[in-house]
Amino acid sequence: MADHRPALEQTVTGARERATGARGAVGRWVPGVRTVTTYRRRWLAKDVVAGLVLSSLLVPQGMAYAELAGLPPITGLYTTVFGLLAYALFGASRILVVGPDSSLGPMIAAVLIATIGSGGDPAVAIGLASMLALLVGVTMAVAGIAKLGFIADLLSKPTQIGYMNGLAVTIFVSQLPKLCGFSVDADGLVGEASGFVHGLADGAAVPAACTVGLVTLTIIVVVQRWLPKVPAVLIAVVAAIAATSLLDLGDRGVDLVGPLPAGFPPLAVPHASWSQLVLLLAGAVGITVVSLTDTISTASSFAARTGQEVRADQEMIGVGAANVAASFFQGFPVSTSGSRTAVAEQSGARTQLTGVVGAAVILIMLVLTPGLLRNLPQPALAAVVIAASLSLADIPGTVRLWRRRRLEFLVSVTAFLGVALLGVLPGIGVAVGLSVLNVFRRVWWPYQTELRRAPGVPGYHDVRSYPDAERLPGLVLFRFDAPLIFANARVFRGQIRKLARTDPRPVWIVLAAEPVTDVDITAADMLGALVGELDTEGTSLVWAELKDPVRRKMDRYGLTAAIGPHASSPPWTRRSPRTGREPAPPGWRRTMGRPSRVTSSPGRRAEHDGRMIADP
Image 1 (cartoon, rainbow, N blue to C red):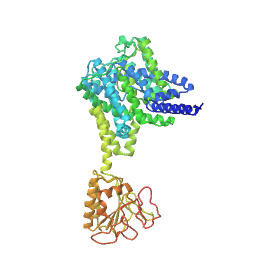
Image 2 (image 1 turned 45 degrees about the vertical axis):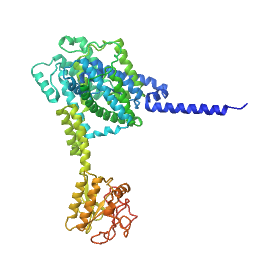
Image 3 (image 1 turned 90 degrees about the vertical axis):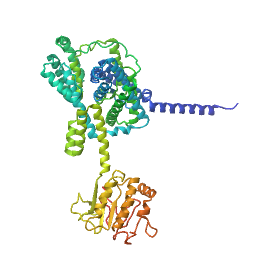
Image 4 (image 1 turned 120 degrees about the vertical axis):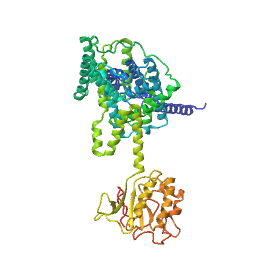
């Protein structure tokens, strides 16, 4: 009888390998599955404790940020629960915490006001906010699947600083009336600031509300400053609730949160009309850019601490899934939170089970003790938001920009003014536009300089660094630190013409072409015409240290026919067709090809900073 055991073993081994491969594929797209299969028992106690500590911050902040977005406080808790659960399944980071965010609150409110106006029906606002979360989630998830994580680079650091500073001031001013127990009917930073001042002048402030709001804010700021490991928000909120119960603040004109709806969050499919959808989609794009930038920066920061690798595209999918999940339970757009992630990390969190525990605590509270927060004063929630706005501002970063680079400082100030004067949504457009224009400016007018021989220093160097450097007779060395494209072709041509007409007129203009990483069609046409023009005037344009990929492009453009080579000349050299003179002064060769030093000493290396081109 034949022995079939080897074949059976091969079949079993193949099945195991296929199962392992399938688990690996699932783990890449759904990291929560991998976390479950690799979870270690010794992590459990730390994750549970961290989740309990985290929940003390999730509840008041979730409610406060919901009101910042113009929504009922309960929606902040719904959003927190399902955002945490979805990210635990699809998020790549082990400890990153997602949920309602202070930086998104004003943007959500601006979208809702633009769609239904101020003072609209809360039920309608909740439905539109859920639709907004769905749009943000789908946009971010699709961008993650398409590997578009580079979108986060649309906001440069100076623009981010200016935008966040503007957002901090906007949030701070918007919460001042609530902190003092009254409201203003105004939109925008200027209108709300004016309304607050007029309200104070008219005696609209409630003394008890001002007291509880300012005391709550003081507790949060002082504890965060001097006892950073202590849950400042929890202590302040508990103190505010206790003060309400002991001093009957509700009877003294202080608005309270009141009892929350009991039971599990209701399932509701987001919907909106076509006209509303257009406005929501425009807002979703801006929220996505801000959320994406915040997510990548926060994930990178905490990954560096724990030695993890940031998977930007999977983070986008995770946050996108959190938004989609929240949208079906009366939620609104979410993002990552640096402050809550820091709390989870300091509390010993090891995995996303921390977030799951936090979500479970909130659900238990909603089902069993919905009246627990009924005596929480509204001014206390305003204090929580104001404390968060203070953390958004980056004054030291702004001062650093002023001291180190004034132009970047002006970009930051412009982004700040865009948010402060135009509003949050136009402000993000201004911020992105400034970043793009700043990149374009550097390409359009790049750094360019002449290189000369400095006494006592080998090689050729930037004349701005060595003002006493001397030019070789009849020769100009020129460096252009950018790719040659349509945007700067005219600038390049103008500078070469200016050098060619200096007195005495140079015979050779040598371009140190190592920084030139590209030449497009527009620049190629310009070069062809420029070479002919210079030859007519008795000046030859020489290329040195040209990179191979760029040389091959110039071959395809046919530039070698205008610049060289000739059969009677060495490779990539050219003799002037009009003058018939030698290709270069003694010790130089005219070259347009592989990166090579323009030097008669092939063994000598150029400096890495590109200032020394040759030493003939």
